[in-house]
Image (tube, rainbow, N blue to C red; front, side, top):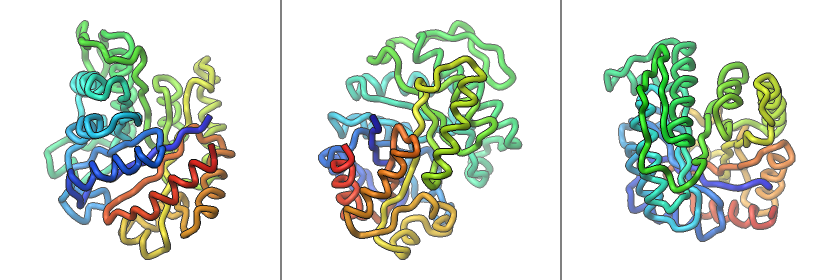
Length: 299
């Protein structure tokens, strides 16, 4: 059964506004809410962006029912041991509702500004592979040892353990060769941002192939997708700025519940186990309400 989430950008807004938005999404019946991990706005237009681990914890404390996650923490910013400890604590704060996502990272300007190395994509994916294996071991098994090129742990323990026996670990990104393969090896889900239903259906086939290559049941890895629900082209541009055209394939433009229901239904038919409605400030509560009505119709 497909679940539905809200993916809230944490740029150009206040914590109070975010908390109100999270509670509204919970009241509308969404199953999960996620934040992201950036130091600046994702389009790099402004510097006003809250920190992800802090807001992940705030999300856990501001809600009572929904799953609480981050899509996704950058493996280049976050030591996997420290991140696993944070996720376990957030699971306790939420009463067992936490999830965690990891990605290779892409916003080079942020890395450079904060003095964090930004190696070529191949090395960043190597780091993602090792970091995800370490996070998974700490969260699922409670201890980990590894001696990789990028990650070293010596009998590291994650105690107290998360409330959940298996806190879900996601991989974020659209890459079909390495990113999907890392998800198939190590993760409980692969989340793909802003693609059409047809492209998502191909991603499902790719993921299934990687699972088969590793001897894993494809049913064990959920395929997620981020989509946008907006009124018109102007509201899409207001939220996503210079990146509006890049994310347009994953946008649902329309002002009727019927339009949104039909569009989200195509993602479900394409194999989405989770559909996340992505929102960025300036917030559009009416679009969120339409999405909430649409998911109620799809259930």
